[in-house]
Amino acid sequence: MSAQGIAIALLLGSFLGLMVLRVPVAFALGMSSVVTAFYLGLPMLMIGQRMVNGLFSFTFLAVPFFILVGNIMTEGGISDRLVKFAEVLVGRFRGGLAQGNVVASTFFGGISGSSVADVASIGSFLIPAMKKRGYTPEYSVAVTVTSSVQGVLIPPSQNMIYYALAAGGLPISKLFLAGYVPGVLLSGALMVLCWIAAVRHNHPKGDVYGLRDSLGIVGRASIGLFTIVIIIGGIVGGVFTATESAAVAVVYALLVTAFVYRTMDRTKIRRIMAGTLASLGMVVAIIMTSSAFGFLLSYLKVPTILADHILGLSSNVVIILLMINLLLLILGMLMDMGVLILIMTPILLPIAVKIGIDPIHFGIIMILNLGIGVCTPPVGTSLMVGCGIGGVKIENTVRAMLPFYLAMVVVLMLVTFIPVLSLGLAGLLD
Image 1: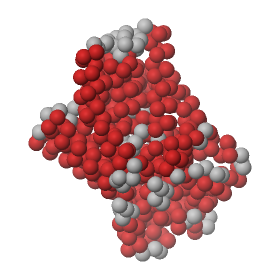
Image 2 (image 1 turned 90 degrees about the vertical axis):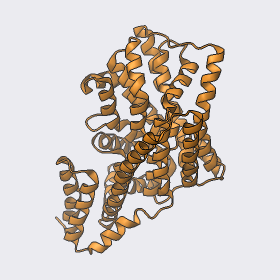
Image 3 (image 1 turned 45 degrees about the vertical axis):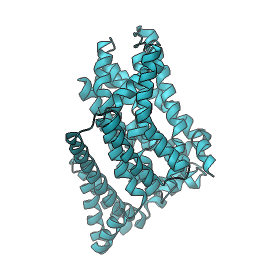
Image 4 (image 1 turned 60 degrees about the horizontal axis):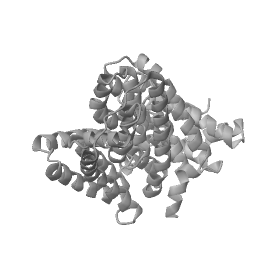
């Protein structure tokens, strides 16, 4: 084996070995990078510089603000208002509470940008509520977990920012707009499944509200949902950058929860800040070490080698896209979503571009693929949280989720092979 081959094996092998030993992913990335750099004779100062350079991006500043605004709206009680808003819209239909779960996740995804936050917030009271209405615990968890995938597609999505950074600075505004249609398409597919299940199992209708109550619920929810207008409208309209819009959204969210909803106090603010700092510390560590890891992948020409192998297997665009999808689905089951975006984007994006796939389109393909992974064992974090809230076994929940997995894969295929679903709205900014 050549020196290059040994270095590649050392880099990837040490990383996977450390992951198997349950070493935190940031440390695994950093340690494997240092060991490989030492073998190659590269100065440690170079690795340190690469780690620091990974944070030198104004766009990255949007990440802590988006994490913070999501935490504020979660602690501030926006989630229960969104659930009632969703019930007003679809509660009158058969299986209305399950349908409302999907709709609420669609709205909440536009605020938190996190699948796990969606499950933890909405699931904390929707899963028990569905169980009381006669839904099985496994089905209740399955609906909550799978609908949370919309949180990574519908902006603002932290994972889209990671992809934009890893891809070399793609426009956030285009990525955000590109996620809307796939997110709504996924929502529609899950709602159809909920309706079919409701008819087959005679699920009950949800609550039906009178006109006066409905208007009150819609009005209270709309105040919180205006956060989405600030973020997306500001970016698309050219009023703010992604970072500035996130900062403005934090101020607005604080004002709404403190003075309109009156659900914010000092204790909650301290809890929000502590949770945000903990999340941000993990994100910063992963971005720094993945920057060094990505530099070594590029230095060892791993993307070029992988591209040659994949393109050597087939020149058919459809086959290549299916292979990439399969690879991402498998990896998504085994590793954290954010880490995979930072590591795999520099490797797979050149292949996608070489076969004529738009980088914005490929970003949505990757994010949806890995979004499926967050609700798939053995590592699926959203699945773990949902099962913990519902008090059910993972294996039983996975069986209930099989139709939902099928629906998500169908949507993934549509998004993969019909580019206009991702690029239609994004093209308006050209």
